[in-house]
Image 1 (tube, rainbow, N blue to C red):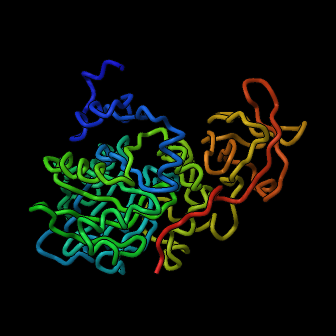
Image 2 (image 1 turned 90 degrees about the horizontal axis):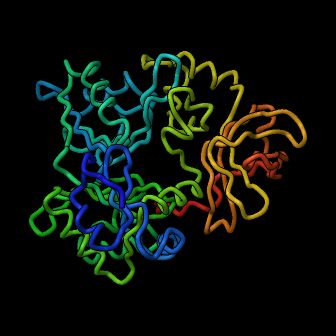
Length: 375
C-alpha cells in the first residue's frame, strides 16, 4: 500500500481498507483500484449482477441563479460555457455536455441535472478545481456556485442494481435513464439518478458524507452487490465506448472529433455564444480531419494508451487513447483517433505493441451492447 498521507480521502476510505482494497493515488485522492477478488471478477460481477462504486472524488456543484430567479436563468447562463441546450431541460432530467475552450477543445465533460430551483453538476475529480474557477470567473455575477464538498457519491451499476436499491427506496424503479429525483431514506436526503458510466443500467446516489458508509454497508449486505474499484470501472467504461477525460478527450480534442456531436442539440449545432462555437459548427458542417474509433487488436495482449496506429505496413495515421482487456468482449479492446479518411468500420490496422506490430481493425462502438433503461 502506498504512502497516501498527502492525499484526500473519501468518506468510505475506512470501509475500502476494511474490505482489503488496494489503494492508489488518483486525482489527489486515495482510491481503491481493486479488492481481493480482482479486477476481472469485479468487471464480470457488474455485468451480471450489481457493483458498488465509490465516486465521491467527483465534484458535485449546485448552480443557482442569483436574486431568486428561476432555474432557467442558471441554465441560460451555463449555456455560455457548454454546447448543450439546457434552458429547455425538464425538471429531473439530465444531459451530458462539455466545457469548451475558444478552439473548441474540451476542458472537461460533465453531467447537468435540472433540480427544482437549481442545476446540479457532476464534474471530473481531476478538473473540479479548474471547473469551479471557470464557473466563478464567467458566471459568478449571475449565479451562486456552491461546491457540495460535504456530500459523497455512490454508483450502483448492473442489471440487478435498481431491483436491489428498490428494496430500500421502492420509488427509484420509476426513474428512466437520465432522470433524477430526491427521496428521504433513514432521515437523510438522497438525490438519485438513473445513470452511470459502465454501459449498464444503474443508479448514482448523492448522499451526505456522514451517512455514506452506513448506506454503502446496507447495499453491500445485499447478496447481489460487490464492491468495485477503479480498475474495473475503467474496463467497463472502455467496453461501453465511453470517453475518459485526460485520455480520450482533452483540450486538444473537440466534441465532433470525439464522436460526441449527439450531445449537442440541433438548435446549438449551427452556432451559439459558448467558447469554440464557430469551430464546432464548422466541423459539424464540413467534417473533421480525425475521428475517435473503436479498435479490436488481434491476439490476447492489450494495446495501451499511446500506441501508434498505422495502416498495414504503411504510415502512421493516429494513436491509441485507451486500451485494455475487455472481459465481456472476450479480448483486447481499444479506442483512439485516426485520420478521418481511414475511419471506416473494417479498416485494417497495425498497432505498435512495445516495438512489435499487432494486426487490428476498426470496429463499431460500443464493444458490448449498452443496457440503459429507456422508457
